[in-house]
Amino acid sequence: MDIFVDTAKLEEIKKAESWGILDGVTTNPSLIKKAVEEQEDGKSLEEHIKEILKTVDGPVSLEVCGSCYDDIVKEAEILYNRFNDVNNNVVIKVPINTAMEQDDDNFTGVKAIKHLTDKGIPVNCTLVMSPNQALMAAKAGADYVSPFLGRIDDYIRTNMGMKRGEDYPKGTYFPQELVDVVRDQKLKSNIKDLDWDKTVYKNKEIMNLYEWGNDDGILSGVDLVWSIKQIYANYGFDTKIIAASIRTERQVRQCAEVGAEIATIPFNVIKKMMTHYKTKEGMKSFTKDVIPEYKDIVEKS
Ligand code: E4P
Image 1 (cartoon, protein in one colour):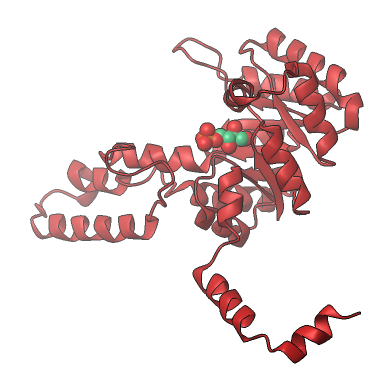
Image 2: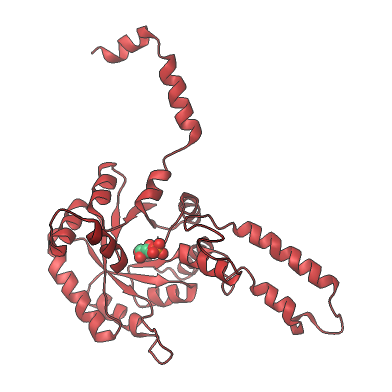
């Protein structure tokens, strides 16, 4: 699985690159805002972006800001033409659906993706929250699709009545298996009191329980990746999945198990992927046990 770092902060990108495991970078307007607010090197945003592109020899996603077709296409072309010459690694991020109001067109993003990919501009389709959106992105020719794991987990938790911050901090793992167990229990206790004169599918309470703790049948962010992977395999789409909006190292592991081609990971989560109590403990005991004769051998050339 390729590892991208999900940040626009140069310091983090350079550090991750120095570890020799970095395959690409993803940015979005919020990440650019954060990086610019914190940077103190006096560089213009244009210089900053160019330096990111030069630092990594892999795809770097830059997102459009507009929400209407003409703006998306224009901005994508401007970003691509202005920056791709730097290191030939610009990918344009386009939201799958730019609609924000009831009457907005739901297909503007897809139409723009089709236009850009037909012109040979590589696209990372972003803000993907459902397998059907990922199917549309692939049909439009997107090179990459970015399902948002953390935000789907948040959405399911919100629908269960949980509040981020109060009931769980941002980086908390979503125990999907536990939700399944609770749902089974709820179903069992409801079935006892069921009015068997009504068929089960007419019983709203039971039917609602099937929708509890999932998003239209998607059980978690990782489940979303799994579903997209199945759909792409069924039809031979070569759109690559970038597991995005990752909050924990356990999500990274599960995405690798499910076969996501890429995970874009916040810098602090990449760091956590390397730590284990027993590794540290082992290092301490091996270091303590080194005898002088052995030290002599390894230190003397
Ligand atoms: C990257 O492509 C996404 O924009 C990013 O992962 C979103 O992460 P967030 O949901 O933590 O903001």
